[in-house]
Image 1 (cartoon, rainbow, N blue to C red):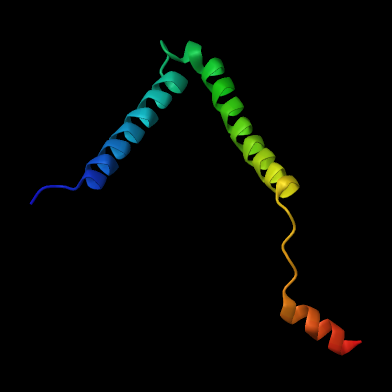
Image 2: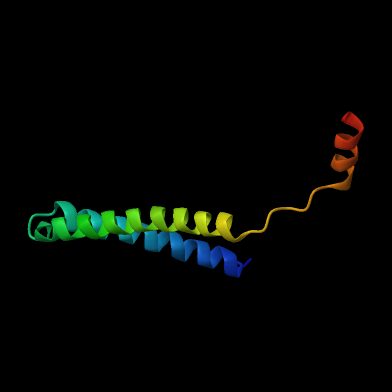
Length: 83
């Protein structure tokens, strides 16, 4: 029985992640390659901070540009009955 497209994609993502981990490790800790460690850390930190701040910016933009919800008629009736 063959694999579905989603399963193939899942294995590709899995393999690419493992290769990425290995390459990252080599760039950070293996002596002939660790001359790149500062640059690798700088790029990683920048991407992490940019992603977090980008998500916060998106949330802020969404909050600022979304119109307020219309009041529900049932709640208006309940408020009128209370007064």
